[in-house]
Image (cartoon, rainbow, N blue to C red; front, side, top):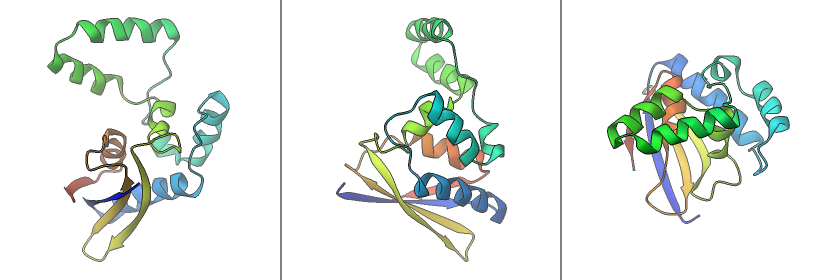
Length: 148
């Protein structure tokens, strides 16, 4: 990966500590490309409980197909609302932090005295789909200040 992106995150001390806690778990043992029921059970014990509580329940195949049919018929604006309402399922979210994600990897992070954290991503190019990271930051109670 040839690009490096620095995501500047602001928030209270507790928010940044929470973010560091999840990033440490993901960085120490990054999920491999095989994300199944066994790996889901494992990650439910690795990620802090407060974070696990934010994930949506896994949809059944029938529920997933019905949701997708409805999503395909929806307007662009309604699609976004549907996605927000559905939330992230753990395995779908973990993919973005896994070795199977070819777009980016967590390079590391640094906490600054100013109450800021900089999360470094190693990326394949300058355009990076970061919704999973953005959601994590939001659930920790922090905000993205800048990306550069």
